Image 1 (cartoon, rainbow, N blue to C red):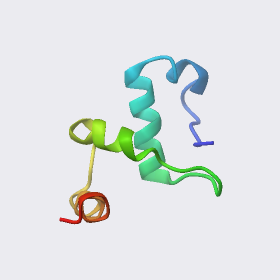
Image 2 (cartoon, rainbow, N blue to C red):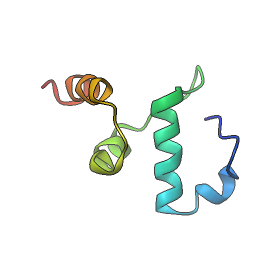
Image 3 (spheres, rainbow, N blue to C red):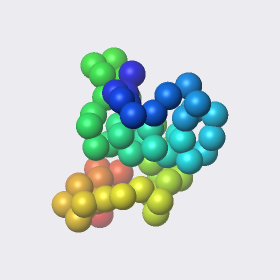
Image 4 (cartoon, rainbow, N blue to C red):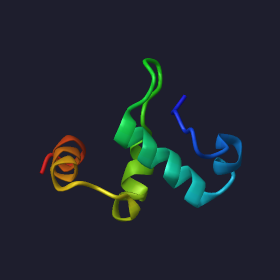
Length: 66
């Protein structure tokens, strides 16, 4: 489970923007041992996520091989 200390995670899952916040937190802070980041969600929200330049290059390499 992603660690979100300043939001109610049950409410976040109900909206598109909330799911994007959860995804951003997963990318920024990582996930638990048995949890994975959904690749389809990353691709779908690629332009809406906040990326540092190095992290964006790394994820482009990992996802698309560019």
